[in-house]
Length: 243
Image 1 (cartoon, rainbow, N blue to C red):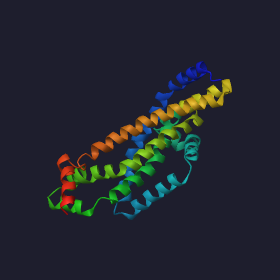
Image 2 (cartoon, rainbow, N blue to C red):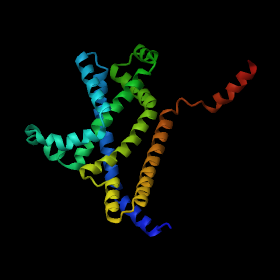
Image 3 (tube, rainbow, N blue to C red):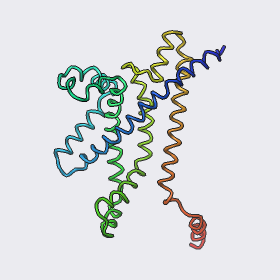
C-alpha cells in the first residue's frame, strides 16, 4: 500500500535541496558557456597551436567520464603546492564550487563542438552579403553570425543543458547535498529506496520540463522571422493551384 505521508514528507525534504541543484546547474551552465566561447575561438583560429590545444581539450573532456574528472579535480588538485598556495584555493577547495568547476569544464567541451557545428552551418553567402553591405567584423558577428549560430545550435544545446541537470547528481559524491545527495541520506535512514528515488525522479522531471519549455520559447523567438506570414501562407496554395 502506498504510504502517502512518507512520500509527501520525502518530496518536501528533496524539494528543499532543489535550490542547491539549480545553483549547481546555472553556475556551471553559465561558466561552461563562457569557457565554450573561448574554446570555440581557439578552435576556429588561424593559429595551428590554438586549434590543436582546443582539440586536445575537447578530446580529453569528451573522452573521459565526468565522474573521474570530478574526482581528479576534487581530490587531485590539493596535492599540488602551487594550487594550495594560489588565490583560487580558498574557492576550489569548497565541494560546491569544485563541483561547479568540474561540470563547467566538461560541458564546455560539448558546447564548443555544438557551436562549431552551428557556425559552420551558416551559408557563406550570408556572410559575404554582410561584408558587401559594408558591415564591420564586429557588426557582422553581432547581427548575422551570432544570432544564426545560436538558432542552429539551440536544439542540441537544449539537450546538453538537460544532461547537465542530470549530471549535477554526481556532486553528491563530493558531499554536495543536492537532490540526489539528500535522497541517499534518506535511504540510509529509512531503507526505502523505491519511494525515495521515485520522488527524486519526479523532481528532476519537473526541472527538465520547465527547462525544455524555456528553450522552446527561446527557439520560437529566434525563429519568428522565418515563419511565413498569413498572407504568404494563403498565397502559397493559390500559386500551387495555378501551376
